[in-house]
Image (cartoon, rainbow, N blue to C red):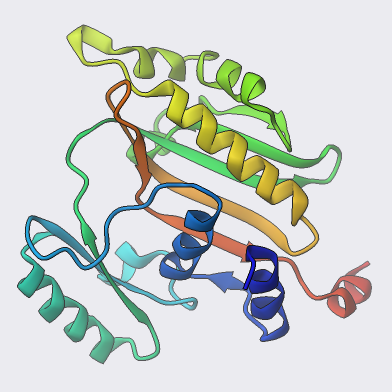
Length: 223
């Protein structure tokens, strides 16, 4: 199925929040990099993804720094506690120099918008998101990552390597276009954190969440 057909299928089947594993499958189709799944070696992240529990860490559904074998044991244990979820084992990203949040939603006044700024734990500490109308072309998103206090984090503070701002701008543009084209089906998309590597080395979306729009009948009843 195309990404739009997938969204329509999910909506018709009554999904409201689309968990990380499925959300990543979808954004990968539009060219957004995600971590490698089911690696044979190296340090892994083990998660259980469930529509009913979008904030996985609050429920103990994320484990970091495991071997592939230990990750499988961890997801099996999580699945016993929370049936109906999807196990997700990925390569643990350890080469990033910045963590970013990228999101899209429908504003009551302006319509579809895209926002981006320092992510991870910095979301709670630094209110530095840049906001633009969606869709945003690459020139607009390049300006976003070079604007505001968050730009200093990407440029490399205190001798740190500068981040791959070009890859980040591309991700922001791609997700904004996708959201604008499907804003009748999606209420919100959030990618947090985007793990941005050093300049020229790309990035990966370490977590993602999609909130679907109500079906047309529900929208009419809410009006």
